[in-house]
Amino acid sequence: MGALRRRFRKSNMLNKKTVDDLKNLRGRRVLVRCDFNVPLKDGVITDDTRITAALPTIEKLIGEGAKVILCSHLGKVKEGPNEKESLAPVAKALTEKLGKPVNFVADYNVTGEAATAAVAAMADGDVVLLQNTRFRGSEETKNGEAFSRELADLADDYVCDAFGSAHRAHASVVGVTKFITEKGGNNAVGYLMQKEIEYLGNAVEDPVRPFVAILGGAKVSSKISVINNLLDKVDTLIIGGGMAYTFFKAQGKEIGTSLVEDDFLEYAREMIEKAKEKGVNFLLPVDTVVAKEFNNDAPSRVVEGSMEKDEMGLDIGPKTRVLFAEAVKDARTVVWNGPMGVFEFPNFAAGTIAVAEALANTEATTIIGGGDSAAAVNSLGFGDKMSHISTGGGASLEFLEGKELPGVAAADEKE
Ligand code: AMP
Image 1 (spheres, rainbow, N blue to C red):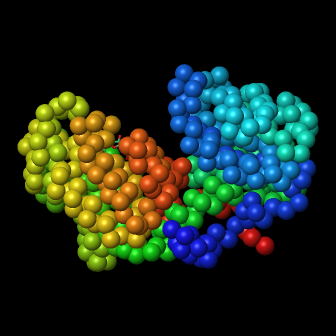
Image 2 (cartoon, protein in one colour; image 1 turned 180 degrees about the vertical axis):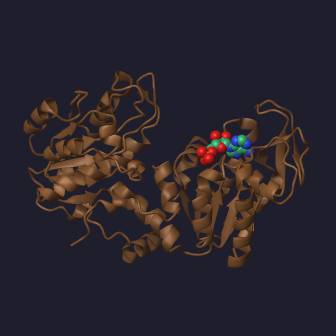
Image 3 (cartoon, rainbow, N blue to C red; image 1 turned 90 degrees about the horizontal axis):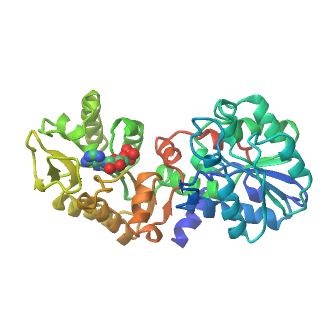
């Protein structure tokens, strides 16, 4: 790992200002966009990974004597501002983790009088948390100028550390940077962003080979560009999960009532063809665990080849588990996004567990895309065995598609 990290650093892919480029921070007001979009149940945070991941940047800024103003969205806020989607539980968790009080501005306006007064009262090294940025509705999600300016008015410099939101051109991610620049401030990326970009960016652009990508999950359509982009980069591409059946059908196999996207059969054929042209080792399941109902307790059997008309594939079979595990054994870089089956049903989780185990046992740098695969790896207890688990589902997918994230693009270039 050590050698690899050094290699990453040297390649210096990220030519953006980082927190370390911000100097003389004592007394400067720094607005930090975090990703505190944590899962909540009855007001209790059920997974605080994202809060923990934000701490290095916050602690660094506190240590430098900056006035640290934090902001984030939480949930989708479909029905307007409400207490259930308030950031109050995050303020409490942060206070505990930082070991110092975090002054939470509960005002649904996010910016405005209450926020301005709270910032004016800050001493060096203090921390203020603003309310959920999505409480400003489309002003936030449509990158509104007024809200962007109000956010910038609260601060001197801006740091984006919200990897999970970096694929969205929202006011608190992108719009704010224009007004920070106008007043002569800096727009930098935080340590979490740096780490995500280092791992995902280097895996895709400059991987240590053999480079294996494993894609699963429900739909081909949501990962079209990922498959297409990765076929230009990988040595081996493995497809499992519900999306494999569209490939099966494209090859003329009977897939019964399995998940399928008929609009993507031609695309699936093209991808199989492209893999051949590029000399990519393209692996599909060789056996499947099928059942007649979408139900954990449905009786199941393993089939090789075609299923019966009333059967659906719910997991990869035992031979496939071995085949996929073999394929990652000698890999040096592995990226995984999407479960191999309906892992939420314990009786159909074996394929996903087998892949997680294989990744835990390889010497390769292992990178887990966010979302379901991160949840699967963590809930199965393999979290600490992976080199990197991304905090951003959508953002990590866009990275694997080869797109530049708006939140990264908006940061200043290094001088
Ligand atoms: P995605 O968000 O596209 O990564 O999809 C994740 C979801 O795909 C999980 O909820 C899995 O239960 C589901 N999934 C994976 N394999 C299958 C399958 N064979 N049939 C139905 N759903 C599946």
